[in-house]
Amino acid sequence: FDLQGELFHVQGLALERARIWVTSVDEKRRKGYLHQFDRRTGKLLRRIDLTDGARYHPGGISIAGRSIWVPVAEYRANSSAILVELDADSLQIRRTIPVADDLGYGAASGRHLVAGNWDSRLIHILDAKTGARVRTVPNPSATRYQDMKFVDGQLVGGGALTLWSGAVDWIDWPSMKLKRTLRAGAVGPIRPIGRGGPYTGEGMAIEGRDLYLVPEDGPSRMFHFRLDERGGGRPA
Image (cartoon, rainbow, N blue to C red; front, side, top):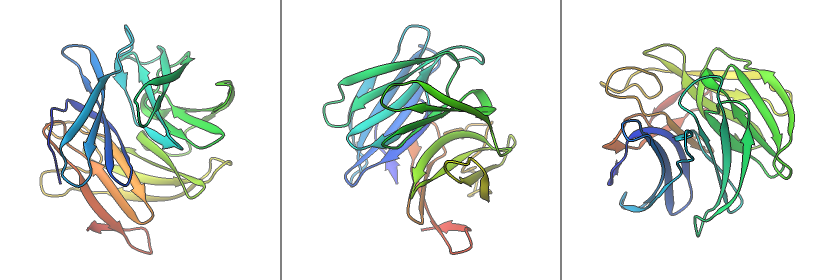
């Protein structure tokens, strides 16, 4: 499924019934963007600039209610970030939450925000209402998460394992214990979740047993996989 509009280094993916949301970073111009596409046609509808000075790297994104949550960080480890809450209809910024760490993704529920730092070594859990940090836990997996979502009361994260391979993990909430892992291989020349080479997009979304990935930088395509009962995946 082609996404018809200018995209840069893809970072995050979120889905609604009629819309596709993608974040990307233009490393050359030091700009970070949130893009909105029509889910039926793939046409670009809107793009907004999320750049906040030295913070121009948007990460994996999440939708909770009518809010879109996007972390925007400096492009380096051990730095700083803000969690940006936007109105999903007007795209007006409702608020920003400063975090004294770089953040690569943000998963949102009604009460909590879950955000991981560089290579997802640490996972920060924040109170969504106050922005206060509740606790920080080590990553329960070897997966370097790039995008994470709350799905049916648990966390699902996707990211790289090595330069050429990746995984999707299911993590119990709130214990943060790893429940199961789906290893991601290649689709032709495309690595669904991995790093290196020309195909380095990192967006992931999941709806029930339907897994969606945007594994390419712009020009980009959204791939759709169907998870079987054992947790394996196949193109839908």
